Length: 117
Image (cartoon, rainbow, N blue to C red):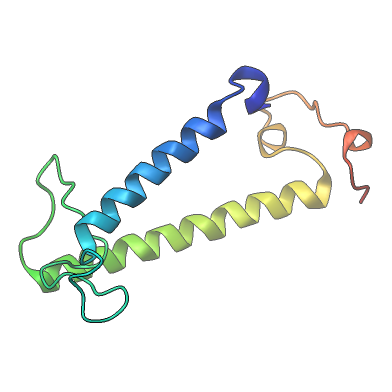
């Protein structure tokens, strides 16, 4: 359905992700030729810290930053479990999550799927 609205969405999305990953590589890793071994990290680089903090929320203490980073990882893992539960519910009864909540009409037609369950 995304391609019907914006045919080049995924191409633009891939370019944005590639740009962010390139920035992370330039910030975190030693340039080729200057490193002692393959994929050396810079001495002042902390994994996950690429210097983007427009609201100045990042703690200055390393231990505090590690604690906040751990909390953020745990939050992401909990969110993934929540999404997995919603997907499992949709697979069990064949209705979208918003249909189950009464917020949308049921437009799902199982006969249009390439694989029949």
